[in-house]
Amino acid sequence: INAEYGETCQTIVLGNKRTGLALNCKTGRLMWIQRDGERLAVNLELLLYQGIDSGAYLFMPDGPGVDTINDTTTRPRMHVVRGPLRHKAIVDYHHPVILTYTVNLLDGLEGEYIDIGVQSNLKKIGDLVLRLKTDIDSGTRLFTDLNGHSIQEHRYKEKLTVQGNFFPMPST
Image: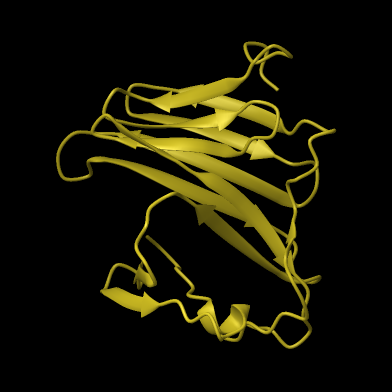
């Protein structure tokens, strides 16, 4: 962990007054995101699902997912870089998972945005799923981006198993 984020650190904030996010120093978990001054509480989970028949377009878990970053006894290594165009935090969980949070601060066409990246070497033991939980009440409706080509509407169906309600988002 960077020297400026010692044992007393509670929160790391990236961004500016318009666009930003906050991370918990002890766990590296996303706590909130901000756009145009409005904050939205976010709980990030990185779940590992076991399954032998899953593949690029087929998600077939054998049971419930296990949160891979719930262990708070070992603090993740965190590296934070702040520049005039971009703020970035790299969170290394001491196993083959690294989360990267980037807040882009450009004006104009590129604009301000938040990017969350996941690097892992867990494919050999299961499927890795990034789940973001918020208090947004959208009923059963969910919208996903299909590689920047179109926005697709989905509906959560309570009778289906997790794989029936799983909607991959390759980019957003």
